[in-house]
Image (cartoon, rainbow, N blue to C red; front, side, top):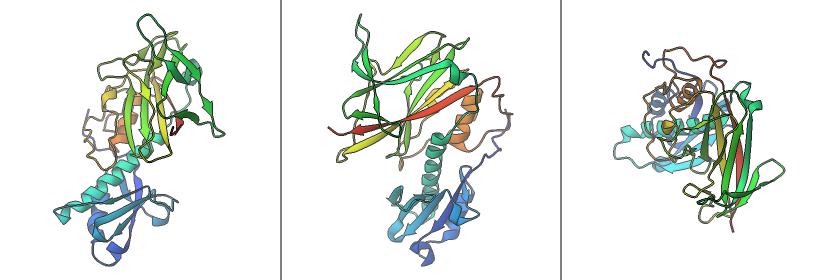
Length: 298
């Protein structure tokens, strides 16, 4: 399909901080690392950068989103070789750009939005042999976010009346760790195919449950669930993002199954789209939405 030499739009990054101004770190080395990325680039105007990286003494770096006074993340990055430090900072910037581009990813209008029925519910009793699961609707706050308590189980119910099968995916996104994991299909070998009129309840048990928890020491937590529905199947096992600060696998396959949604997701994950033309959205439409769940500690 050609060499992956088409770079999509990149996040603008600004560099500042005492470690640069004092000469402790050479800003040119970090600028070179940022400029070599397919996901981030040096911002033409630092005041309007998507991400600001502040370098402090002792290899401490703070990462700020645009117009944010509080740092999204801060790391002391130990390294045995100073030459590897710019690449490590570049990797964190790339990770942050991928997470937020996943959150922001939207689809053009299509028939799929009108063909689906999607509900987030609290699972009261999981499915068991010969017994269907019991669930109840979730309460929402004034912003439309769902509200649950730690230890409770979430379930997502999906059905549709489209003329052909659709493919249903649930991605759990954690803003605290800036990570993303595929919740459904449950396993790489499982199919996401849902026939017209068929209903799927994700997290209904008895084997697979979505138990919501709050990190130790926190009074509450937030989970974000990003839903994708496609007219064609994608290679879903590769759509993931580890927690910030851990090694992010290099995704070399820019095409997956080659369908429109798979190509769009891989553009987000790599910043590249390859040289093959993008598929027609009209022929392979897809749809996405996301819901926030506020979790209260018990």
